[in-house]
Length: 107
Ligand SMILES: [Ca+2]
Ligand SMILES: [Ca+2]
Image 1 (cartoon, rainbow, N blue to C red):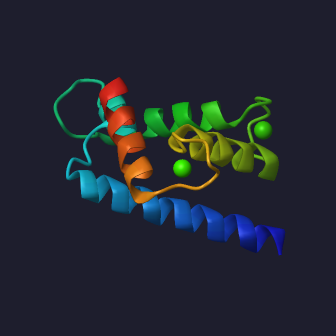
Image 2 (image 1 turned 60 degrees about the vertical axis):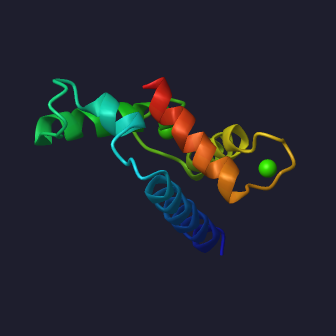
Image 3 (image 1 turned 90 degrees about the vertical axis):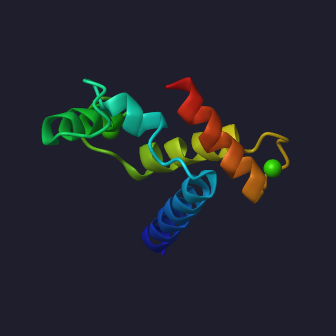
């Protein structure tokens, strides 16, 4: 049950993130732009691999090389809280879009 909830939550967040990114009409930004180390506007396999390793390391809070449920859920909750700009415990579409805009601009 808990696994299903985590998968459902992850799928929902991914769908919302994709929708927000598409809404912003500029999907090349934030983490993707950061991963493009040579700045050519494309990700090579090496750049993608290095970027994913960096992202994984950020999520792996205890640095044991695996992601526990709590590490995964905590990371998603931090992302949710960062996006919830008015702190009401709910994300509006505009909060999510603004969150991804801010992420793109910070990279
Ligand atoms: Ca871990
Ligand atoms: Ca909110």
